[in-house]
Structures are given as C-alpha cells and as structure tokens.
Length: 229
Image (cartoon, rainbow, N blue to C red; front, top):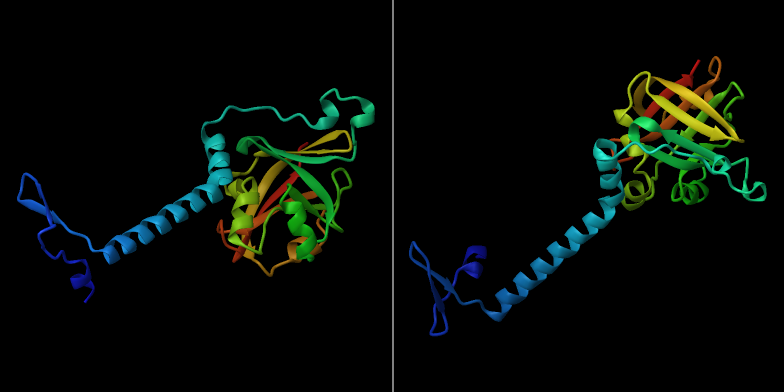
C-alpha cells in the first residue's frame, strides 16, 4: 500500500527527463507534493534546532582542540577601579580545556528551581561545602536535569571534563586570590550517590561534577583535585 502511494502514475502531463540510462518520469499529485513539503519542512526545522542546540558544545570542543590558549584574567586583576571590584567574585579556569566560568556560591544542590537559575549563568558551588583555602571539600557542579535543551546549552564547559587527566591543573579565583589544584582522579558514579560530598575528606579536596554520558542524567562524572604544592 505504501509502495503504491509513491509509485508514479503516467498521464499526458507526465514529464520525461532524459538520462544516460533510460527515462526519469515525474508526475506528482497534490497529495504527494504536500507530503514531500511537510517532510522537508520538518527535516529543516529539526536540523536548525540541532545546530542551535549544540553550538555551545561544538564551539567549546573546537576551541579545546584547535583554539589558541588565552590566559584568563579575573575581574579583580584586570585593573578595574576599586569601587567596581567585587572581591568575593568566584571563578574557575581549566587551562587544558581552554575554559573558564563564573562560579555562583552557596547554591542549594537539592533545590532545582534555585540551581537551574545559577547553571544558566555559570557553575554552581554547593551550599554547605567549603571555599578555597578553608581546607574542606569544595563541590562545584554544572548539570541540568529538567531538559536536554538546558543540559547542552548551559553545560558546555563541564561536558568536556572527561578529557582531564591526572596532574592537569584547575585554577580557582576567590576573594582576590588564586588557588591551583592538581587533578588526582576521576570517577563515574550513580546519580543517587552522594557520599563523596557528604563524607568529610582529609584536607582540602576539589570536586567537579557533571552528568554522564553527555546529554543524559543517568550517572555523574566527578573530577577529584588537590591543592597544588
């Protein structure tokens, strides 16, 4: 039945287009034209949406692979007038990934309405965890669980975390100071596992978390880093 729908029916209006091997007949009915137009429109709409959706991730990946290394300078070190500097600004830079982002402090990791707002602007620091220089566990996360759209559009930086290896550097800028950390490990855990954050660590420990695999919320990829000595 489906094959018959697309099978050409010859009539006086049938166009015969000469080709090297025989003739090509073309005589579409109004219904076939409608079906073709709808299919083409849906395809182009889907393609446009995918391009728009993945532009941040594609840009981040191409910059990581091909882009030049640009040194990140936090606002407090840019020579701005003192009255315009907020020394509590919090930033993260990952030199290997050529990526940087503002960090929003004290974001409740269990309150979706609050953390989604922060994640659309940058990286979130989990409320109740430590800050650089305090000797505690610092937990930073960038993942969105409400839709694939938000996950890909606003999580491009941390979606490349899997490219980090042991001894790669992570820089945190906090309260006019720079803190450098060495990557020591990375793990993939279940999305329900929270003991890595709640269990006190010996000394200062930096944890970076994102969803894994990219575009899903099934598991969590966690990067472990210790202060660089």
